[in-house]
Amino acid sequence: MSESPTSPVMVTDRTRRLAFWLFLLALTVYLLTRLIGLADFPIYFFTDEAIQTQQAADLVTRGFRGGNGAILPTYFENSGQFNLGLSVYAQVIPTLIFGKHIFVTRGTAVLLTLVAAVSLGLMLKEAFKSRVWWLGPLLLAAVPAWFLHSRTAFETTLMASLYAAFLFFYLRYRNGHLKALYPALIAGALAFYSYSPGQVIVVVTGLMLLIADARYHWRHRKTALKGLVLIVLLALPYLRFTVTQGGAQFQHLSLLNSYWVKPLPLWEKLGMYFIRYVKGLNPFYWFWPNPSLIERLWPDLTLPAWLFSARTDLARHTMFGYGHLFWATFPFWLAGLIRCIRRFQDPAHRTLILATLAAPSGAALVDWGITRGLVFIIPATDRKSVV
Image (cartoon, helix red, strand yellow):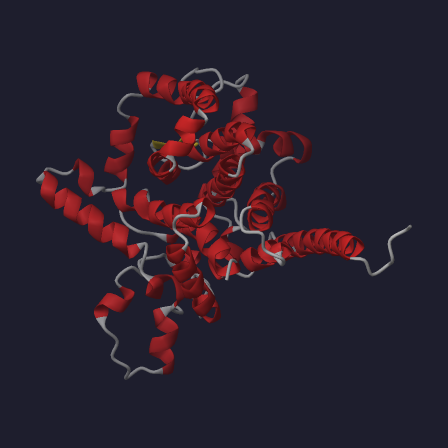
Protein backbone atom coordinates (compact mmCIF):
# COMPACT_ATOMS: atom_id res chain seq x y z
CA MET A 1 0.00 0.00 0.00
CA SER A 2 1.47 3.34 -1.05
CA GLU A 3 1.96 6.13 1.46
CA SER A 4 -0.51 8.99 1.44
CA PRO A 5 0.76 12.45 0.43
CA THR A 6 0.40 13.60 4.04
CA SER A 7 2.25 10.71 5.65
CA PRO A 8 4.91 11.68 8.25
CA VAL A 9 7.74 10.25 6.12
CA MET A 10 6.84 12.29 3.07
CA VAL A 11 6.31 15.44 5.14
CA THR A 12 9.77 14.96 6.62
CA ASP A 13 11.32 14.47 3.19
CA ARG A 14 9.49 17.51 1.87
CA THR A 15 10.67 19.57 4.84
CA ARG A 16 14.25 18.47 4.32
CA ARG A 17 14.14 19.41 0.66
CA LEU A 18 12.63 22.77 1.50
CA ALA A 19 15.31 23.42 4.13
CA PHE A 20 18.02 22.52 1.61
CA TRP A 21 16.68 24.97 -0.98
CA LEU A 22 16.28 27.65 1.67
CA PHE A 23 19.90 27.06 2.63
CA LEU A 24 21.01 27.55 -0.98
CA LEU A 25 18.89 30.70 -1.15
CA ALA A 26 20.46 31.98 2.07
CA LEU A 27 23.94 31.39 0.64
CA THR A 28 22.92 33.24 -2.51
CA VAL A 29 21.71 36.21 -0.47
CA TYR A 30 24.94 36.09 1.52
CA LEU A 31 27.03 36.21 -1.66
CA LEU A 32 24.99 38.99 -3.25
CA THR A 33 25.31 41.18 -0.16
CA ARG A 34 29.07 40.70 -0.33
CA LEU A 35 29.66 41.09 -4.08
CA ILE A 36 27.35 43.94 -5.12
CA GLY A 37 29.36 47.17 -5.21
CA LEU A 38 32.37 45.35 -3.79
CA ALA A 39 34.96 47.67 -5.33
CA ASP A 40 33.12 50.74 -4.01
CA PHE A 41 32.48 49.74 -0.38
CA PRO A 42 34.37 49.94 1.86
CA ILE A 43 35.43 53.21 0.27
CA TYR A 44 39.12 52.51 0.91
CA PHE A 45 41.31 49.82 -0.63
CA PHE A 46 43.89 49.45 2.08
CA THR A 47 47.53 48.53 1.60
CA ASP A 48 47.05 45.37 3.70
CA GLU A 49 44.58 44.22 1.04
CA ALA A 50 46.63 45.16 -2.01
CA ILE A 51 49.85 43.60 -0.75
CA GLN A 52 48.37 40.12 -0.82
CA THR A 53 47.79 40.26 -4.58
CA GLN A 54 51.19 41.85 -5.10
CA GLN A 55 52.87 39.15 -3.02
CA ALA A 56 51.02 36.49 -5.02
CA ALA A 57 52.29 38.01 -8.29
CA ASP A 58 55.84 38.24 -6.91
CA LEU A 59 55.65 34.63 -5.75
CA VAL A 60 54.85 33.44 -9.27
CA THR A 61 57.57 35.66 -10.78
CA ARG A 62 60.17 34.20 -8.42
CA GLY A 63 59.22 30.61 -9.24
CA PHE A 64 57.21 30.17 -6.03
CA ARG A 65 60.08 31.27 -3.85
CA GLY A 66 59.91 33.86 -1.12
CA GLY A 67 61.99 36.99 -0.88
CA ASN A 68 64.65 35.05 1.03
CA GLY A 69 64.74 32.27 -1.59
CA ALA A 70 62.72 29.70 0.39
CA ILE A 71 60.54 27.47 -1.79
CA LEU A 72 56.83 27.81 -0.95
CA PRO A 73 57.44 30.07 2.06
CA THR A 74 55.25 29.64 5.12
CA TYR A 75 54.84 33.37 5.73
CA PHE A 76 55.38 36.51 3.69
CA GLU A 77 56.85 39.79 4.86
CA ASN A 78 54.61 42.82 5.23
CA SER A 79 56.06 46.11 6.50
CA GLY A 80 59.03 44.44 8.13
CA GLN A 81 57.08 41.60 9.75
CA PHE A 82 56.06 38.11 8.66
CA ASN A 83 52.28 38.15 9.06
CA LEU A 84 50.89 37.03 5.68
CA GLY A 85 50.46 33.36 4.88
CA LEU A 86 47.63 31.41 3.30
CA SER A 87 45.87 34.55 2.02
CA VAL A 88 48.74 35.15 -0.44
CA TYR A 89 48.47 31.64 -1.89
CA ALA A 90 44.70 32.11 -2.21
CA GLN A 91 45.29 35.07 -4.54
CA VAL A 92 47.69 33.28 -6.91
CA ILE A 93 45.22 31.70 -9.36
CA PRO A 94 42.79 34.68 -9.46
CA THR A 95 45.75 37.03 -10.11
CA LEU A 96 47.08 34.82 -12.91
CA ILE A 97 43.66 34.61 -14.58
CA PHE A 98 42.19 38.07 -14.01
CA GLY A 99 45.15 40.23 -13.09
CA LYS A 100 45.36 42.83 -10.35
CA HIS A 101 42.00 44.41 -9.64
CA ILE A 102 40.17 45.48 -6.50
CA PHE A 103 37.15 43.33 -7.31
CA VAL A 104 39.33 40.29 -7.97
CA THR A 105 41.29 40.65 -4.73
CA ARG A 106 38.23 41.27 -2.59
CA GLY A 107 36.05 38.83 -4.54
CA THR A 108 38.49 35.99 -3.82
CA ALA A 109 38.33 36.80 -0.11
CA VAL A 110 34.52 36.95 -0.26
CA LEU A 111 34.25 33.50 -1.84
CA LEU A 112 36.47 32.08 0.89
CA THR A 113 34.14 33.44 3.58
CA LEU A 114 31.49 31.10 2.18
CA VAL A 115 33.32 28.48 4.24
CA ALA A 116 32.08 30.25 7.38
CA ALA A 117 28.52 30.63 6.09
CA VAL A 118 28.28 26.97 5.12
CA SER A 119 29.95 25.75 8.31
CA LEU A 120 27.61 27.73 10.56
CA GLY A 121 24.53 26.36 8.82
CA LEU A 122 25.77 22.78 8.93
CA MET A 123 26.74 23.09 12.60
CA LEU A 124 23.20 24.18 13.40
CA LYS A 125 21.84 21.27 11.39
CA GLU A 126 24.07 18.43 12.58
CA ALA A 127 25.36 19.43 16.01
CA PHE A 128 22.40 21.39 17.37
CA LYS A 129 19.56 19.71 15.38
CA SER A 130 18.01 23.08 14.61
CA ARG A 131 14.93 23.08 12.39
CA VAL A 132 15.93 26.47 11.01
CA TRP A 133 19.55 25.61 10.37
CA TRP A 134 19.36 27.25 6.95
CA LEU A 135 19.24 30.65 8.69
CA GLY A 136 22.94 30.38 9.61
CA PRO A 137 24.31 32.22 6.54
CA LEU A 138 21.70 34.99 6.88
CA LEU A 139 22.52 35.57 10.55
CA LEU A 140 26.20 35.80 9.70
CA ALA A 141 25.48 38.12 6.76
CA ALA A 142 23.64 40.54 9.07
CA VAL A 143 26.49 40.94 11.58
CA PRO A 144 27.76 44.53 11.09
CA ALA A 145 31.45 43.77 11.73
CA TRP A 146 31.32 40.72 9.47
CA PHE A 147 29.45 42.64 6.74
CA LEU A 148 32.22 45.23 6.69
CA HIS A 149 35.24 42.97 6.92
CA SER A 150 33.94 40.20 4.66
CA ARG A 151 33.86 42.80 1.89
CA THR A 152 37.59 43.42 2.32
CA ALA A 153 40.62 41.25 1.65
CA PHE A 154 41.92 41.43 5.22
CA GLU A 155 43.13 37.99 6.21
CA THR A 156 41.16 38.06 9.46
CA THR A 157 37.97 36.84 7.71
CA LEU A 158 39.88 33.97 6.10
CA MET A 159 41.15 32.86 9.49
CA ALA A 160 37.68 33.11 11.07
CA SER A 161 36.10 31.18 8.19
CA LEU A 162 38.58 28.32 8.45
CA TYR A 163 38.12 28.33 12.23
CA ALA A 164 34.38 27.84 11.65
CA ALA A 165 35.17 24.84 9.43
CA PHE A 166 37.44 23.50 12.17
CA LEU A 167 34.59 23.70 14.70
CA PHE A 168 32.15 22.05 12.30
CA PHE A 169 34.37 19.06 11.53
CA TYR A 170 35.41 18.73 15.16
CA LEU A 171 31.76 18.51 16.24
CA ARG A 172 31.19 15.84 13.58
CA TYR A 173 34.09 13.92 15.07
CA ARG A 174 32.65 14.44 18.54
CA ASN A 175 29.28 13.10 17.36
CA GLY A 176 30.77 9.80 16.25
CA HIS A 177 32.05 10.54 12.74
CA LEU A 178 35.61 9.71 13.73
CA LYS A 179 37.26 10.39 10.38
CA ALA A 180 36.02 13.99 10.58
CA LEU A 181 38.90 14.61 13.00
CA TYR A 182 41.31 14.75 10.06
CA PRO A 183 39.60 17.56 8.08
CA ALA A 184 39.09 19.34 11.43
CA LEU A 185 42.84 19.32 12.03
CA ILE A 186 43.54 20.43 8.46
CA ALA A 187 41.06 23.32 8.75
CA GLY A 188 42.59 24.28 12.10
CA ALA A 189 46.08 24.26 10.58
CA LEU A 190 44.95 26.42 7.65
CA ALA A 191 43.44 28.89 10.14
CA PHE A 192 46.74 28.83 12.03
CA TYR A 193 48.65 29.76 8.87
CA SER A 194 46.17 32.46 7.83
CA TYR A 195 46.61 35.18 10.45
CA SER A 196 49.09 35.74 13.27
CA PRO A 197 46.53 36.05 16.15
CA GLY A 198 44.97 32.87 14.80
CA GLN A 199 48.08 30.95 15.82
CA VAL A 200 47.29 31.55 19.48
CA ILE A 201 43.53 31.11 19.08
CA VAL A 202 43.82 27.75 17.30
CA VAL A 203 46.36 26.38 19.79
CA VAL A 204 44.35 27.54 22.81
CA THR A 205 41.14 26.08 21.36
CA GLY A 206 42.88 22.80 20.61
CA LEU A 207 44.31 22.50 24.12
CA MET A 208 40.94 23.23 25.73
CA LEU A 209 39.18 20.66 23.53
CA LEU A 210 41.93 18.14 24.23
CA ILE A 211 41.36 18.50 27.97
CA ALA A 212 37.58 18.82 27.90
CA ASP A 213 37.10 15.76 25.69
CA ALA A 214 40.04 13.73 27.01
CA ARG A 215 37.91 10.67 27.76
CA TYR A 216 36.42 10.67 24.28
CA HIS A 217 39.87 10.97 22.68
CA TRP A 218 41.16 8.11 24.83
CA ARG A 219 38.17 5.95 23.94
CA HIS A 220 39.01 6.49 20.27
CA ARG A 221 42.76 6.63 20.76
CA LYS A 222 43.53 4.87 17.47
CA THR A 223 41.94 7.76 15.58
CA ALA A 224 43.43 10.29 17.99
CA LEU A 225 46.95 8.91 17.47
CA LYS A 226 46.58 9.20 13.71
CA GLY A 227 45.41 12.75 14.32
CA LEU A 228 48.55 13.40 16.36
CA VAL A 229 50.72 12.22 13.46
CA LEU A 230 48.76 14.52 11.15
CA ILE A 231 49.35 17.45 13.54
CA VAL A 232 53.11 16.83 13.38
CA LEU A 233 53.01 16.85 9.58
CA LEU A 234 50.91 20.00 9.51
CA ALA A 235 53.35 21.69 11.89
CA LEU A 236 56.39 21.10 9.65
CA PRO A 237 56.02 24.35 7.65
CA TYR A 238 55.88 26.31 10.89
CA LEU A 239 58.89 24.47 12.29
CA ARG A 240 60.83 25.27 9.12
CA PHE A 241 59.87 28.93 9.46
CA THR A 242 60.93 28.95 13.13
CA VAL A 243 64.31 27.45 12.29
CA THR A 244 65.04 29.80 9.38
CA GLN A 245 63.43 32.93 10.86
CA GLY A 246 63.95 32.34 14.56
CA GLY A 247 63.56 35.95 15.67
CA ALA A 248 60.53 36.76 13.51
CA GLN A 249 57.97 36.31 16.29
CA PHE A 250 59.89 38.61 18.64
CA GLN A 251 60.31 41.18 15.87
CA HIS A 252 56.58 41.00 15.09
CA LEU A 253 55.65 41.70 18.71
CA SER A 254 58.21 44.51 18.87
CA LEU A 255 56.78 46.24 15.79
CA LEU A 256 53.32 46.01 17.34
CA ASN A 257 54.70 47.51 20.58
CA SER A 258 53.57 44.50 22.60
CA TYR A 259 54.12 44.65 26.34
CA TRP A 260 55.47 41.08 26.22
CA VAL A 261 58.79 42.25 24.76
CA LYS A 262 59.20 45.10 27.25
CA PRO A 263 61.34 44.81 30.42
CA LEU A 264 58.42 44.34 32.79
CA PRO A 265 57.91 41.85 35.65
CA LEU A 266 56.10 38.66 34.62
CA TRP A 267 53.23 39.29 37.05
CA GLU A 268 52.66 42.70 35.46
CA LYS A 269 52.63 41.19 31.97
CA LEU A 270 50.12 38.56 33.08
CA GLY A 271 47.93 41.29 34.56
CA MET A 272 48.06 43.29 31.33
CA TYR A 273 47.22 40.17 29.36
CA PHE A 274 44.20 39.50 31.58
CA ILE A 275 42.89 43.06 31.16
CA ARG A 276 43.18 42.89 27.38
CA TYR A 277 41.68 39.42 27.32
CA VAL A 278 38.61 40.54 29.28
CA LYS A 279 38.11 43.44 26.85
CA GLY A 280 37.32 40.90 24.16
CA LEU A 281 34.50 39.41 26.25
CA ASN A 282 32.85 42.76 27.07
CA PRO A 283 29.24 42.63 25.71
CA PHE A 284 29.11 46.44 25.57
CA TYR A 285 32.05 46.40 23.18
CA TRP A 286 30.30 43.99 20.86
CA PHE A 287 26.71 45.26 20.93
CA TRP A 288 26.84 48.98 21.81
CA PRO A 289 26.75 51.36 18.82
CA ASN A 290 29.72 53.54 18.02
CA PRO A 291 30.18 55.88 21.03
CA SER A 292 30.61 58.92 18.76
CA LEU A 293 27.03 58.51 17.52
CA ILE A 294 25.72 58.36 21.11
CA GLU A 295 27.72 61.45 21.98
CA ARG A 296 26.29 63.33 19.01
CA LEU A 297 22.72 62.43 19.84
CA TRP A 298 23.08 63.06 23.58
CA PRO A 299 26.09 65.36 24.10
CA ASP A 300 25.28 65.84 27.79
CA LEU A 301 25.02 62.12 28.50
CA THR A 302 27.60 60.92 31.00
CA LEU A 303 28.58 57.29 30.50
CA PRO A 304 30.88 55.21 32.70
CA ALA A 305 34.40 54.96 31.34
CA TRP A 306 34.52 51.17 31.62
CA LEU A 307 31.62 50.92 29.18
CA PHE A 308 33.86 51.76 26.26
CA SER A 309 37.14 50.55 27.67
CA ALA A 310 37.54 48.18 24.74
CA ARG A 311 36.50 50.56 21.94
CA THR A 312 39.96 51.10 20.50
CA ASP A 313 39.12 50.23 16.90
CA LEU A 314 40.13 52.43 14.00
CA ALA A 315 37.31 54.13 12.11
CA ARG A 316 37.87 51.99 9.03
CA HIS A 317 37.08 48.88 11.09
CA THR A 318 33.70 50.05 12.37
CA MET A 319 30.21 50.52 10.92
CA PHE A 320 29.09 54.01 11.97
CA GLY A 321 26.06 53.83 14.23
CA TYR A 322 26.34 50.08 14.78
CA GLY A 323 27.96 47.83 17.31
CA HIS A 324 30.12 45.03 15.97
CA LEU A 325 27.12 42.77 16.65
CA PHE A 326 23.62 44.14 16.00
CA TRP A 327 22.20 45.37 19.31
CA ALA A 328 18.72 43.87 18.70
CA THR A 329 20.23 40.37 18.74
CA PHE A 330 21.64 40.77 22.25
CA PRO A 331 18.68 38.98 23.97
CA PHE A 332 19.20 35.97 21.68
CA TRP A 333 22.95 36.01 22.33
CA LEU A 334 22.35 36.13 26.09
CA ALA A 335 19.72 33.39 25.96
CA GLY A 336 22.08 31.26 23.90
CA LEU A 337 24.87 31.84 26.41
CA ILE A 338 22.63 30.75 29.29
CA ARG A 339 21.55 27.66 27.35
CA CYS A 340 25.15 26.73 26.57
CA ILE A 341 26.12 27.09 30.23
CA ARG A 342 23.18 24.95 31.35
CA ARG A 343 24.04 22.29 28.77
CA PHE A 344 27.78 22.47 29.29
CA GLN A 345 27.96 18.67 29.51
CA ASP A 346 26.81 18.45 25.91
CA PRO A 347 29.87 18.53 23.58
CA ALA A 348 28.32 20.94 21.07
CA HIS A 349 27.26 23.55 23.62
CA ARG A 350 30.53 23.17 25.53
CA THR A 351 32.54 23.70 22.34
CA LEU A 352 30.79 27.03 21.72
CA ILE A 353 31.71 28.18 25.23
CA LEU A 354 35.34 27.12 24.77
CA ALA A 355 35.56 28.79 21.35
CA THR A 356 34.22 32.00 22.88
CA LEU A 357 36.81 31.86 25.65
CA ALA A 358 39.59 31.24 23.12
CA ALA A 359 38.61 34.11 20.80
CA PRO A 360 40.37 36.97 22.69
CA SER A 361 43.53 34.97 23.42
CA GLY A 362 45.45 36.10 20.33
CA ALA A 363 44.57 39.79 20.44
CA ALA A 364 45.47 40.02 24.15
CA LEU A 365 49.15 39.55 23.32
CA VAL A 366 49.18 43.11 21.96
CA ASP A 367 45.89 44.92 22.51
CA TRP A 368 42.31 44.24 21.64
CA GLY A 369 41.04 45.13 18.17
CA ILE A 370 38.14 43.87 16.07
CA THR A 371 40.37 42.47 13.34
CA ARG A 372 42.38 40.47 15.86
CA GLY A 373 39.24 39.19 17.56
CA LEU A 374 36.81 38.87 14.64
CA VAL A 375 36.68 35.11 15.18
CA PHE A 376 34.50 35.81 18.26
CA ILE A 377 31.63 36.31 15.79
CA ILE A 378 31.63 32.62 14.83
CA PRO A 379 30.57 31.12 18.20
CA ALA A 380 28.49 34.23 18.96
CA THR A 381 26.40 33.78 15.79
CA ASP A 382 25.93 30.07 16.39
CA ARG A 383 24.94 30.72 20.00
CA LYS A 384 22.26 33.21 18.97
CA SER A 385 20.89 30.52 16.65
CA VAL A 386 20.56 27.67 19.14
CA VAL A 387 17.90 29.38 21.26
